[in-house]
Image (spheres, rainbow, N blue to C red):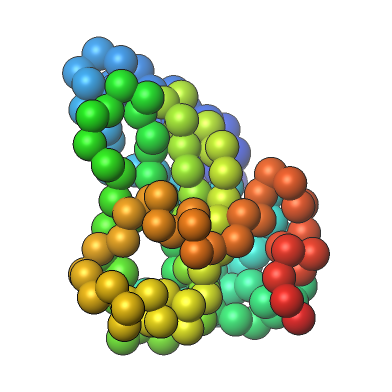
Length: 156
């Protein structure tokens, strides 16, 4: 029997990370774990049955059984730098990547989805190892909060 439910643990994690950010000005590297949890609860995605490098979740709806990689970024309003998504392993066996944008309270604000083919196409025209959050948002599709069902936001 668990002492705490996963929901309570994630809420405590958000509070701890928020307090740490406020007291130190530094970000704890836990947003990807929160993002996986949030996507599972907000969009009903599932854990993969078998672990695979670069695959964090399995899709539902029009993304049924597709392999999903998760990225996240905390957007701090006082930051003077352009936020980057970070390294993305193009060679891993994923089909879509989801980016969860968090505010300084570690609350999810937006979720965007981008297909691997769209990312590869973007990198052909602008070869870089990193992609900015702004570029991801520009070429991706916003799938939350407007649409509770990712299937409604994607082309079948």
